[in-house]
Image (cartoon, rainbow, N blue to C red; front, side, top):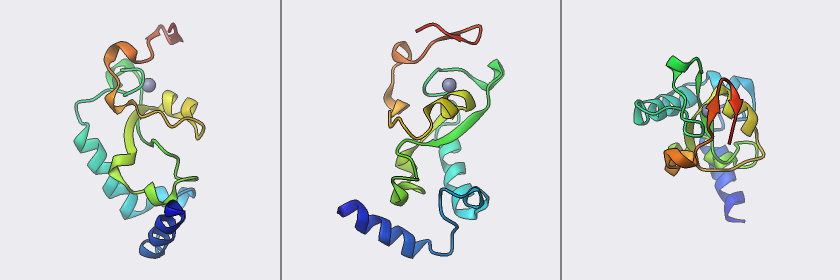
Length: 118
Ligand SMILES: [Zn+2]
């Protein structure tokens, strides 16, 4: 119930912003601002799930830990965002809420020659 109230509050405060599940949302100033804050906060961080860096050929994405489709009120909450490479982000989709921010390197997914080995 509390999340419902938070969603209503979010919707009211950001009623001028397209729905976070829409492609238009990714073009808004609000998303660009919070995305930049996350990139700045984690500027020296590789993918938080597999620990690969862009120099290893991956693109980094800012990802919602709790999906914006089910947690609308967290769409622009910096505490709900982390850095994943495109491949990890695509695999995670909306079905996993793992918070990889505190993962130690040894618990991260290991990749070798693009094959997941662990
Ligand atoms: Zn990754």
